[in-house]
Length: 102
Image 1 (cartoon, rainbow, N blue to C red):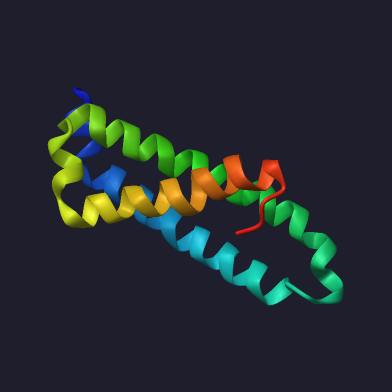
Image 2 (image 1 turned 30 degrees about the vertical axis):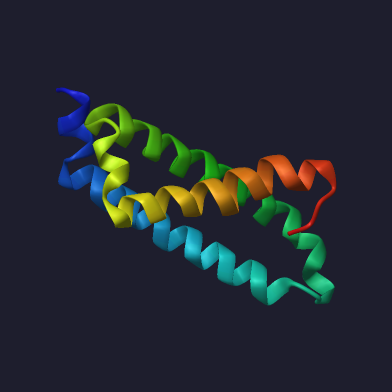
């Protein structure tokens, strides 16, 4: 099947939706562990966060390849991409390695 059919399929949308929910749960767990004695357990959650950033970045790239630049012109898609790029890619993979906390 073509990439457009895969990316547009219900299975792909459901999978991404489940990943969003699991990511939200992990973010909630991380927020509840901050500034506690269990903060040492945060390393696992940081690794999970990198995993989700990579997965969602791949999702955006696949959607762009399948639909072209028109995809990002739709406001919800633009906001989704901006969220991943700003809070994920820039924060996790650019600023934090430079020692800049956002």
